[in-house]
Length: 109
Image (cartoon, rainbow, N blue to C red; front, side, top):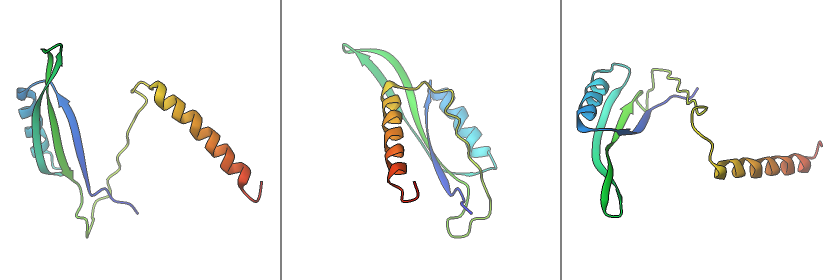
């Protein structure tokens, strides 16, 4: 059986006030131990002018002891909400070609 030991979450948060709220929520959540929490202020510049600002948060969440895991944690990632880039569509096409080539090379085909 596989166990999730830890996860590093990287989140874009609009401002420091929201970072503080997030930190409190994560610290008080009893489903994991908040091992590390840090953030950096980021600026998006265009022609030398700041057009956007945000905080980039990195939080390390520990779910199990690596040597003696106790809790089975299931993590599901739903990517259906994310747009598909043209680059990944091309990669998917390449993967199909590779899969077909592998199938053709199998001795029982």
